[in-house]
Amino acid sequence: MHVSDKICVFQIYGKSARVVTDTFQMFCDTVGFPTEVLSDRGGEFVGVTDFVSVHRRTAASRPLSNSRLGGKHREFGNLGRASDISPLDAVLLFNDDTVMFKR
Image 1 (cartoon, one colour):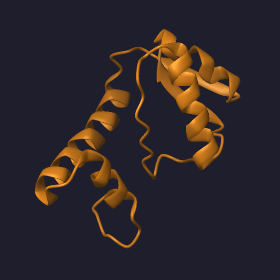
Image 2: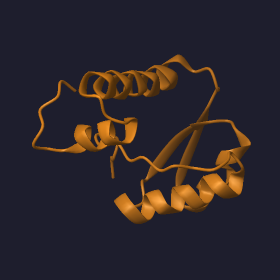
Image 3: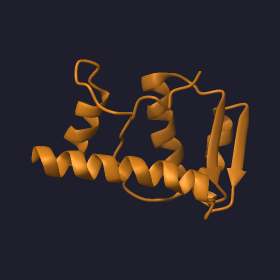
Image 4: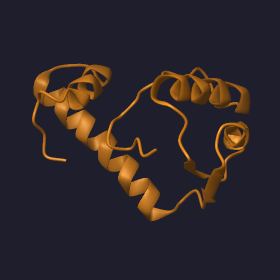
């Protein structure tokens, strides 16, 4: 399964392994279980291995991973400011297949 063409947002209330694992479970319940996860080496991702067969870890400052995520953050920020909406509403608008965006 490849789910990176859509954006899912879950508010989390901490960075502990337990909180991240519980949030990842909600993600999997929403969109299904991915076959592979890419994360940095942070300890908060230790529980992710319970849900996927392949958990690849990169360096925390890996430019490719950071630029892809940073690009999405910039896109949502720009969309929110241009439309005078919240970042969450920008994500919902981004995921709306009836709205055209350059992707």
